[in-house]
Image (cartoon, rainbow over all chains, first blue to last red; front, side, top):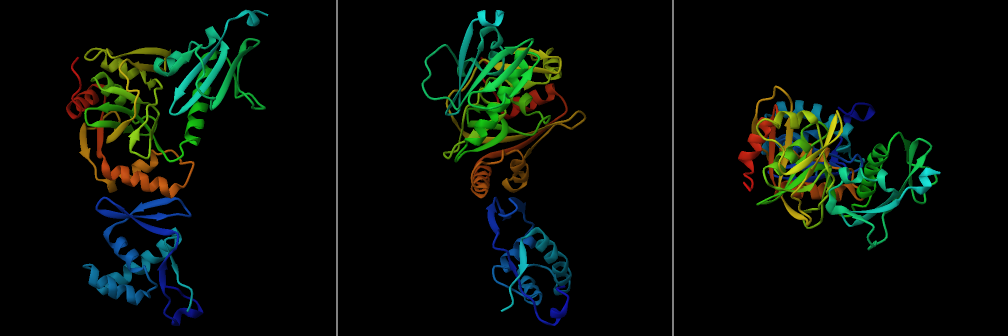
Length: 99
Length: 285
């Protein structure tokens, strides 16, 4: 997913500092401060963004989410491969700086 | 020369916490009474505070020029005084929105029901103003048109501008529900202004937010909405805040969580009137 020369290294994703979760009714919304945008989250996106409170690799996210949702690991892997780049384009997540 | 002989007048408008002054020939200013409820208009009285803006309307040959005191350029030159006043109305809205401070403001009308203030929020042509008219005609006190500002205590502030109404609405209502709690003024064939008789001059706590949807052919229905399902629409109907946008979003989320939220869909004015009569039974007097 991250491609390039660093593909061998497990890259970690994290929630962007500008992305803040806000309780709305019985769910949560994602507020992106730098874009002044608010997105009401579906249950899976909500779990994912909470998992990204701390930097995690895709493999770690799959494990975490497998315990928190009904998704199979295979399905979660496919979903994350699609969703993470999309959230990155929105400014909601980013690749964590290498340690 | 004749313009110099015309009687001049100064009118003061009281909107939110602000005052606006308009000066010009008396007969050119009569349109102010079509645009604003008489309760916010003082003519010839003492000014109780410095105005947020002072407008001057004067004749320029056969046309009319509108200026703001202190501005280098006029706001515009118009064929008739009324269109100059419409421009002033727009300018006043801009100034008020720039002075919201800790308030949030929706593109909405508002009335006061027994439960509290009911906001009718929407963009142009969704039936926001006609929905406000229905509720006023059902006996609820008129509170706001066009700008419904909510203060930090959750109260909707009076904004007593007259309602802009599509003449087709009053034509549809005429047979069964002729206008009886206000008066209609014909601005032109495309637009009427409705001046309600019964008004609320004090802020009222927000209780309900209605999102009306008017579209010919639509099925009549009322949907109770959750905060999360209404939030995107509400944000779209909120004026851009002058201050911290995140603080405004937090306030809107809070307001949405504390209010009854309804989407009211209807295909015509008579159906809308019936739906609103069921939802908000009014004063039969």
